[in-house]
Image 1 (cartoon, rainbow, N blue to C red):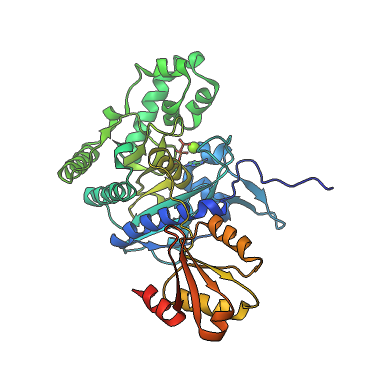
Image 2 (cartoon, protein in one colour):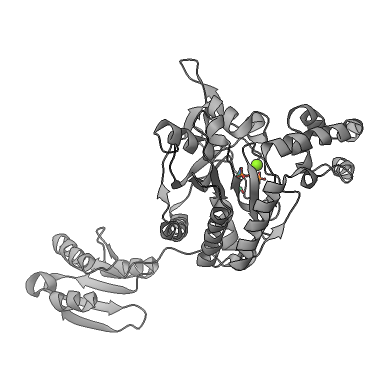
Length: 417
Ligand code: ATP
Ligand code: MG
């Protein structure tokens, strides 16, 4: 026998028993998006590597070590998308959707990152993302956060997530802070972990995210980004907080929150949970007013988020339990040589709006009843010789055991109401 093939590490199948939960949850989210007048955009999974290097940032974790990149037969370097914003912006610029107009977009689909797989962290995972283009206002930032809060409520998980919020100011503010941080950290260089030492020259702000204890100790007395935020950014952040409070949105200001992507400015946020261990962030996002320009478009403000879909499902499952696929309303037993009639009855019941499992496999009556029980269907309809002769069927409610013989037409009519 040849060796059985397995899926790649970190690449998951979504099995039939899980797809109902998956799809229903997505439907709930899409209903909320619809109320906020968002339109879906579908962009390719594979893009030029340079898009992510420019869009996400050369010195970010994602581009430095998490991308699935390869060279095509033509010698072009391409990458599976590690996130959705860069590709969405590329599409908007390419199709003239960003210049001088407003867009309210969302996408859903797989993202790919070469990470060490563990619970809530995979190499192929899914994100629901939202991008709003053409608006720079605290009110818009607040509206998107209010929408997320509404999503958590619709899913019944709002009490298990916390909104963490920060402002990272403008690119200039961060450049000034970066210089001051490097100046301070240079004198403690030996005490920093290797990654952080390297980042001194490439992306000093990412040092703040270091999980290394000694590095964190050194950082205790370092200058803080807060001291470099401009008055304009401070006022913007204050207004955002005021609007959120007036709309009943609770949040925690976390001055340490900087996010791992280069394109953000001003507002950054994460929704975190204490219920998923180390993979605590369910959703993250922020404002990106320079990204479109960085990618070659006209300067256009943007705001958006990425929601980790598998983590969301894990959280729902953890705190509420999962939705299970509903069973059939009716199981049709084909008693005898009645296949054609069985299909006619099934069609009539489906047209009446019922979910029907028709046993086309036939078999002995007793075996078919066992199958009906196993299927979890609520009721059984028996199609037999009498059905062929007189258009009558046997109906049995499996829960109560109640059984009766009825004319097909009467039964279908009764099912409709
Ligand atoms: P983390 O700190 O957990 O690595 P991140 O900052 O890399 O997250 P983002 O790039 O902001 O994550 O992506 C948005 C969301 O996508 C995350 O908050 C998370 O819920 C989800 N996510 C990110 N990477 C993965 C992954 N490898 N597997 C599953 N979900 C992921
Ligand atoms: Mg990550």
